[in-house]
Image (cartoon, rainbow, N blue to C red; front, side, top):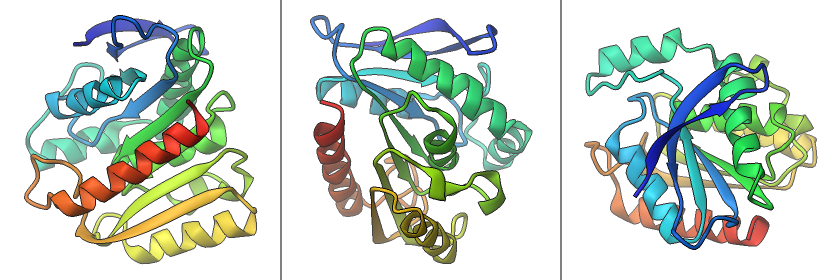
Length: 222
């Protein structure tokens, strides 16, 4: 359904990504989807394709510059090598700006490390209209989440060893302190419960989280 394209970052450098749209949806609302720590793999492309079926134009920036892995150790290495500030303010912002050329509104939706980057995008990407984070929270010092000025939705796992519940509680306190328009949902599930290729996949939690995400997108960007 989709293809690899190249788009420009705010600093005039380029980034590639997986782009998909329906044949008659060139002006549809946009969604920038942010990968898990595995890279731009078939699973995250499948997420993009599903969103196209829901009536969106979608771009998944290739944050690892072509590298994809199935191994947790290598995924951790790639994640640790990533410059999160550059990814949020350049790759992701550039992707939002690219979709914005034809889409009236653009959302950012990310999973795992992509969820953490989505939170950063909510702070550092002024062009974004709404953000949705699935089980990802950046370090508190990385961004002042009280300053978020767009609708924010989060989906978090209660048995998450990567982003534990207390980290989510701290994020929620910051959002409340800043009077951010937000919805936070917690699921009796494990980290990455929404990835059908994981042992921790939870179809019931995934179904509910997707219903809430699509309603949120429909409410704010359609």
